[in-house]
Amino acid sequence: MCLGVPAQIVEVADREGGLATVDVSGVRRAVNVALVDEPDAPIEPGDWVLVHVGFALARIDEEEARETLELLRRGAELERELEEMRKGTVR
Amino acid sequence: MKYVDEYRDPALARSLAAEIASLVTPGEVVRVMEVCGGHTHAIYRHGLEELLPPEVELVHGPGCPVCVIPMGRVDDAIAIAETEGVTLATFGDMLRVPGGSGSLLQAQARGADVRMVYSPLDALELARREPDRHVCFFAIGFETTAPATAITLLRARAQELSNFSVFCNHVLIEPPLRAILETPGLRVDAFIGPGHVSSVIGSDAYRFIPEEYGRPVVVSAFEPIDLLQSIAMLLRQRIDGRCEVENQYTRVVRPEGNPRALAAIAETMEPREDFEWRGLGVLPASALRLREPFAAFDAERLFALPGARIEDPKACRCGEVLTGQIKPWECGVFGTACTPERPLGTCMVSSEGACAAYFSYGRLRRPREEAGVGA
Ligand code: SF4
Image (cartoon, rainbow over all chains, first blue to last red; front, side, top):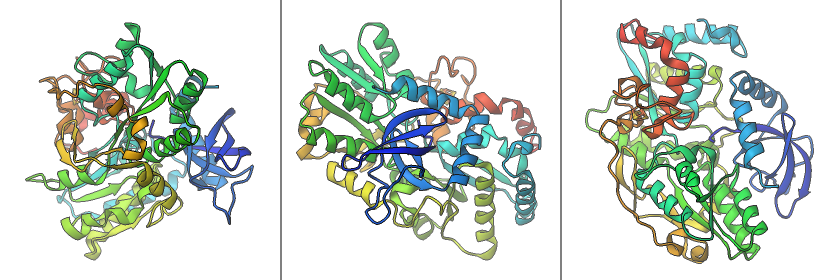
């Protein structure tokens, strides 16, 4: 549960409520972006963030995001995290 | 070096390994504690110890939030789950942690409504969907996870939900580090600081370690290359006669942390007088509870909890593993009575726990360590 998983913002659904839809390796879910959405640097679709338990903790650049994803994929950690995301998401 | 080809940049990994070897004094062992369970996992997963000279010994620290939850708190969660009309929601890892009377998974099998959620936001959504049930979120985690619970609480209040609560077990990273640093006969020379916790609290939060205890700290990211770089930075500090907090994870960690995350925690939670840690005992001001204005969401005020202190099973040596005093395989039940499928102790539950990480990836290297060949 302590992993930070790189995710790409697909849509900022509700900026006031801090909610955005992200894509993690093909799995989509709503995450809270309130901790990283700055008025002078708003979160936009295409941005990459590090997601922990449904919250974006930090912004990261695309290259780092792809490298981290690749590493997590090889280590099977990504599969486990996605599984938790699929099973544990209330839709 | 059989793992090194898998690294993002094998050439860089090799040159960092050579640099590290050049920074140690032959025969003089430097003990480096990685505080965070995510680092422990990465070290075993990528066979990092194979790249290090025998003079660098890695010691695993207390930074796995699942591992430090005492059995009594699991029993409290079970009591909540077994209350009529209540749904208990928590992270997958918590379901398997053994309490004094079994795990939450076993409570679920007996008929309690226990659900795995990915995020506290999912627990909140459950409450919104099922107004006839009370949904309690069993919250665990260091300062990395506390902001998530904090923002969820703020949303619950904004939505005026009356069927949602939090059983707060958030813990703080500084008190266990102090406890370890104050252990008589401490055998840790330097610290690899956690990455994601630090994105919230900032790298400045560790300044007490060099200033009060004379040990250097490097806050590190999670890839094997990052960890090698951090170890080299720590060794260089020793050679230069410096002792300070350095930040290898500047991409994500700022000296002051994330002010919004800290504000959300401060608005909803306050330090407890003390909290019991598995293996470390009762540590003052080491955990958070909900503040008075959030009393209506506080499971500890809403439910009558047993609140018992339960001794760990005799065979279990999680406390010594969590404080770096023994290696996982030195515990007598490691891999026999205690496995990831049937954990006896907490360090075997989460993949960030040292015992689980070692069980999954490290077993082959154990004979070499035992023979003193160096990892
Ligand atoms: S092997 Fe099991 S009981 Fe022993 S220290 Fe590890 S988790 Fe605890």
